[in-house]
Image (cartoon, rainbow, N blue to C red; front, side):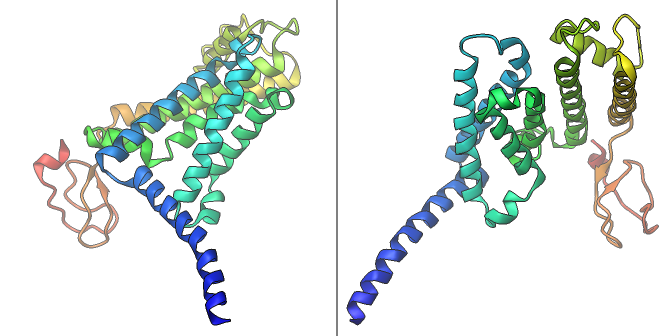
Length: 272
């Protein structure tokens, strides 16, 4: 009786052990620095960039015969990627509650039901934002010495994501209604003109709703532009932990910690 129970336990343990081995391999591929893992991470990054390029071009490709084939192929890739990342995470349920993962799941839903959710397809560009929340995106940049420009790169990406989300929304909500937005390029032109507050006036969204959309685009657009300009033209901060309070970021010529006033001794090479 004891032997049969042990056999049942061993049989139940074997799939769990196999699953743990798979999870360990995935963790190494997604998070380690081995040559094999780096090649895998580079492949994932290239595929992600290709997917984002498709999302940007979707409004122009939606009437082509190959659109649904590409759409469902990308959905299959995202299913595999989400499943692999979930298995590679230490706490899958906690990982599933993260905002970038929730956004990716929503993007997957729009891919699986493109006819029903095409009007929300412009939100797929949020994949670019979720991609930059991952270490897979930043690790190659850090290895090449671009880590100090992380905030600037993130600001550029935030601006691009906002630009294409608004363009997609304007195109979906106002195109082909005899209201000045006759195509995706018109929607992009209106968004850029509004974000930069240039306001040529040749394309104007009609009605109260159109005015409210324009106001929101101008407020958020100019805020993102100002943030980007600050990061480009403001002297970069250096990483030097304060011995007293632990604050990490300081101005290159800082003598005292701005948080606690402790005297700092930032090396000259730290400013470069």
